[in-house]
Amino acid sequence: MSKFYITSTLPYTNSNPHIGFALEIVQTDVIARYRRLLGEEVFFNTGTDEHGLKIYKAATDKGVLPQKFVDIYAEKFKELMKVLNVSNTYFVRTTDSHHVKAAQEFWKLCSERGDIYKKNYKVKYCVGCELEKTDSELVDGNCPIHPNLKLEEIEEENYFFKFSNYQKPLLKFYKENPDFVLPDFRFNEIKKFVEDGLRDFSVSRLKSKMPWGVPVPNDDKHSMFVWFDALVGYISALGWPDNLEKFNLFWPGMQTAGKDNLRQQSAIWQAMLMSAGLKNSKQILIHGFINIEGQKISKSLGNVVDPFVLVEKYGLDMVRYFLLREIPSTEDGDFSYKKLEERYNGDLANGLGNLVQRVLTLIDTKMNGELIFKRELVEQDVKNKIDELMEKWKSNINSFALHEALGNVWELIGLGNKYTDDKKPWAAIKHDEKEFLAIMTNLVAAIYSLAWMLQPFMPETADKILESFGADKSADILENYKFIIKKGEGLFPRLS
Image (cartoon, rainbow, N blue to C red; front, side):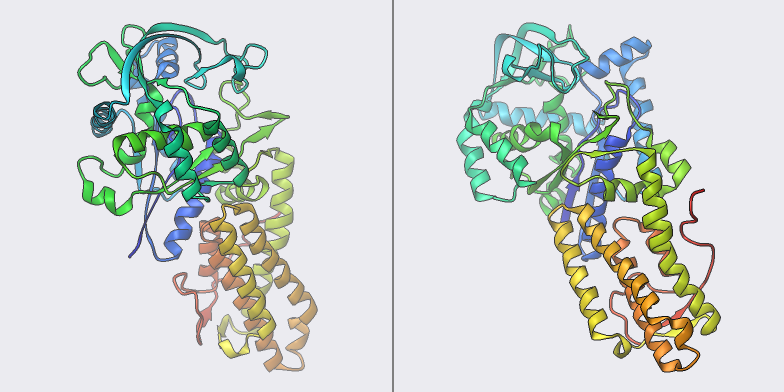
């Protein structure tokens, strides 16, 4: 069985999870579930980034020890995985003893390569990004991502990573891997960034000023810079460096990340991997942001939407559907309760729910709840359309166009409802039972196929559909299959 590794970024544990990260983790989950459908063994990692100045300040402001602070919020992110039905197989915490050991070992490898050195420096620093900022990056003297946060002036002796050594190796790697970053326009951004020249960056902080971090090996006066530490979480999750057998089975892997992480994931981390003598990541998938009232959703801006509240009010798969369908996978999208409810009534209640309920009712009332599926009764035009949409669905998932892949499913739903209206099975049974059986067989073929395609996106709903038809979700080819329906409540009752 082939192996597949995917990881989300590791969100900061400085406050409650918001819908922006919910988008990323659900997108990552779709890819993990899809690869399992293809028969691959999937290692799906997520977790929490628990060090750094931002977290230290948040804990201090609340008057609690940093470890207790991050313990509380890590549990909330773990709970989010359950609430969103995320199928992760591992949850790394950067305060785990194994991770701390891995980060220190990674540091040693980079240091032995000659890529870590110490110097004095002075820089403007954004606590929100946990990154240094040059004047050219600022807008009106502020960080464009966190304009409400005052930049800090840092002047001290730190360790630095020789990022400048990796301009040519990175550009060579990008050229040899033309689909390394999706979408293309984000790949062009990072290539331009690297082409313009790379500056060495600080990878440590004085413990006297920032004690909350992984200790630098052989120097008890310094803590690792949070980005250096957190990025290693992608490989410590796989058991590196202790379990190299497992690591080598799954690495390199795929990563999802927001556009504000483009530089860190596709340039800084890749240079660090080169320095440590490890293979680069396989692919980076860059998603957009969710906007609300014209602003990017941000914890620092205080305009977050609580995914726990959304799921409680509208249901798990409605929230997953909205995030995956309404928000273009690689671009920014807008959130509003009005849009969410319109999607619910239009797409789920009137579209999917209506088709499934109509067919179930006809089998229940006209066929004593049973249908013997015979593949030869499926019309060639129907089969061709299902196959065509299935191929587009696969292509779109592989291209990280998840919203378009869901669009393929809804195209099939629309065809199913139109086919029902055109063929009028409730009238056909009155004069030709064979025609009625053929119509119903075609409709069941369409519903089975769309339920199979829904599994990565809306697994709970897909399971309910297949269970209603008494179907085996592991079978993607139907041959003389006996469907025994279990008609229950409708999938998506309309919102009043």
